[in-house]
Amino acid sequence: MAADMKILAAVFLFCFADCASVSNGPVPVVIWHGMGDSCCNPLSMGSIKRLIEKNIRDVYVRSLEIGSSIEEDTLNGFFMNVNDQINMVCQKLATDKKLQAGYNAIGFSQGGQFLRAVAQRCPTPPMLNLISVGGQHQGVFGFPHCPGDNETLCEYVRKLLNFGAYVDEIQDRLVQAEYWHDPLNEDEYRTKSVFLADINQEQSVNQTYRNNLMKLKNMVLVKFLQDTMVEPRESEWFGYYVPGQDKKLYTLFDSPLYTQDKLGLKSLNATGRLHFLTSNTDHLQFTEQWFIDNILDKFLK
Ligand SMILES: *[C@@H]1O[C@H](CO)[C@@H](O)[C@H](O)[C@H]1NC(C)=O
Ligand SMILES: *[C@@H]1O[C@H](CO)[C@@H](O)[C@H](O)[C@H]1NC(C)=O
Ligand SMILES: *[C@@H]1O[C@H](CO)[C@@H](O)[C@H](O)[C@H]1NC(C)=O
Picture (tube, rainbow, N blue to C red):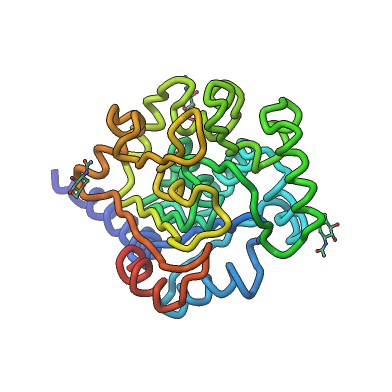
């Protein structure tokens, strides 16, 4: 008996010494950039990373790089199949020792819905808080601007979307086609969308997605009230066009996704874990102070 106790104490002490650094520090943060951006742009994700590091002592922040260079990372935001991107990220997270006790995730623009897919598909290591900053959770129907002022690239993407977002070859390769949601062709969207329709339980209801999403401590959805990039901007809160036209909108609370609790969002809301935030600015144009007050102090500390 006494010997058993000694062993137990030894095991406990061993783990205490060894595991303390993993579990006692601040919760690490994983960020995923938006379209036209990259992991390490000093003016965008770089400044967010620095801001978090400045405000949370010793925090580990990982800004995801999709590919092996900044150029590749930027291009992959347009031309690498999103499901492949999610697999790649799940792999990165699973093998990052510093994340194994759990992490908070912040997705910017399309990175918002991509990190939601990570939460739904890859529960290990556990995502704790998911913060979507201007993510398009019901997709988009329109491509009004290109970020990063690359009009050549912008025109090319627009041409492909106009040619046919649901054409197999385009679905397979063009990121923005994979969350293109045509309210005039809901059936086609439902059957052809290789990414968004799947994570939004449009084809069938995958209970694993629901169970995994409900493990989140909090899900935070930021909508930009003056957004001129996302059409419609209500998509940032899971709202969208009523099927059959592109003017009238419904909100998350009116949608079957919510009322039938297909994704666990109703359960998250019922337990006070679904948060709707706004910034009264254009797409991603929040101030540092807004970020500190609304995100950092409330969900990252
Ligand atoms: C549901 O999602 C999980 C996690 O991604 C996946 O492993 C499983 O194959 C999916 N089930 C169906 C029926 O698609
Ligand atoms: C725009 O994107 C294309 C395709 O990636 C690239 O070749 C070109 O250099 C970019 N132009 C500018 C001005 O960044
Ligand atoms: C969502 O949660 C809030 C806060 O708990 C609650 O006031 C509201 O009634 C809920 N909405 C719906 C539609 O369930």
